[in-house]
Length: 366
Image (cartoon, rainbow, N blue to C red):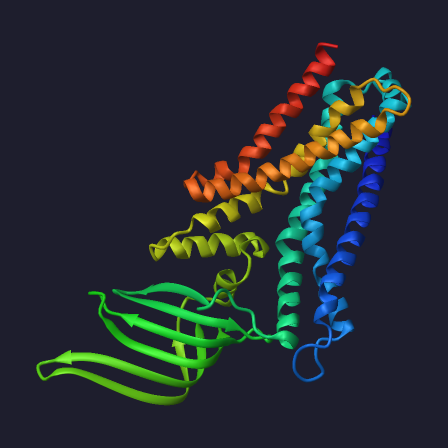
């Protein structure tokens, strides 16, 4: 049985590798074409072709993370269809490869791709994507969101703080920082403005600070304004939290998403979008298992000459429909406030049931 497993695993790994390289080459070309109009722009030496190549190369891990499940599906469908067409799978079945063993064999190689997808999506892609954004910002401008930048909130004892960061600079520093401190009754207590700042453990260091404090007493309201060359503000808002508010949450690490959505809940802010992103981050690697289960019934089909192309195309369309449904569930779940885990796991559970039903019908009824 080890020989059978090695044969099937080796064939699937080769097919998935070939499909993945082909897709990555295609995405690399399209990304590079998109960057060509930007070459020569920016200050100083400008955004050159070498920087564009590096930027596009840094996007490869993100594309790999997105493409791995569908590449697993295409590669597995092709292998199982080819084995069925050449009657090799029939020979393997007569050699002792029963339905349960066939399912277990594909699930084993599926777990390998699950681990690979998780490592790429949780460690490689976030770092590479952030480096790509900072590289581009260094030559073309800052990283921002909308007209007003990113807004964050934090509770400090009985008081609360609202923070606005206009943008992130190319070196990861803060630009256009505004901090509003409110007392326990919701009255504005102080306002801090700084054109730039930097992250330190447990604090932000702000430069060229203008600090305005408001107080009320028996003689009326008082406003005290002071200017400081630098000022350290103690806070639990980390660089990852600011990046979460500015960058795409899908590019964050799983732990960073978990920490940020807990921070939002603790400060009575809506965390639905980040909860859905967190659960999708957990369930997305498991879609590789769904893909190999979806490919298994193709080994039990009876092919006529030249009919393999249609079946492979059907498998590919099934995979595309899975990812479309996955994205639609995400949007609908955010709008309708569905349970985040159900929004993330729904398509995978549905397609797993369909795959197992097709597998059971082909094996037990035919």
